[in-house]
Image 1 (cartoon, rainbow, N blue to C red):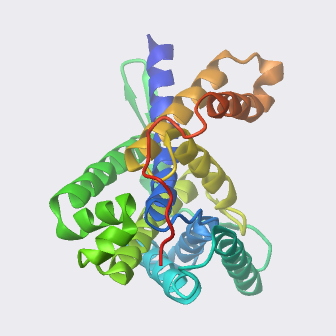
Image 2 (image 1 turned 180 degrees about the vertical axis):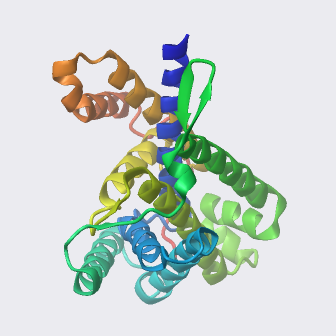
Length: 294
């Protein structure tokens, strides 16, 4: 029973991480049809903000990390993506790579290539024991924080005017504009929410690893993009489901693979993803047809 419970905790923790990163990617793609690979650099901005402010009270550090990433996401949208909004997908994709490399090089000039460390919340290092099961507080915080954010985002998207406008823009952008939806405001709001999710993800990631580097956002974005693709790019429920599917698969492979193959866990994981995408190229959830965002 302890093994089963440990598996459930591991699957929920990994799935929560993946869902958090996948949501930010899916939200932007649903509205702009943009795969924003610079999303990883938003995580990097949050991580380095934590490093710079770790001497502050931890509440102020966490708040500053989220605010800094949301502001950077808004600047990214305004300076890089708004001027080329009507361009073809290849131009948007190249721009996202350009923004990614630009932010990485700016961070390299400021912080050098040497890895940094940060220890923000002492609670993240401790654990709680329930029965015979020992669970790290970071896993508990990750699961609960993701659950709260998912519920808050669902309420925002269904109960507020701005959320309804985002959903309308994701379904049919041109029709939403004709009905009076202000495209600049909707897209900026989507980037801000994506930045907020990336900021929370950066906090949890730094809490998990304790290390900060220029490429800290690369792996989370890879797994987030994979989770979003599994669920169906542009589908927010699909991104969540895809994240937890990936989390369960990760935990299963961790438990079932023999010791000599454990180092190849991700290879087996992505082989399974390839097989799934071959069977369902559009993902698990049907999304609206692609159309240009201008």
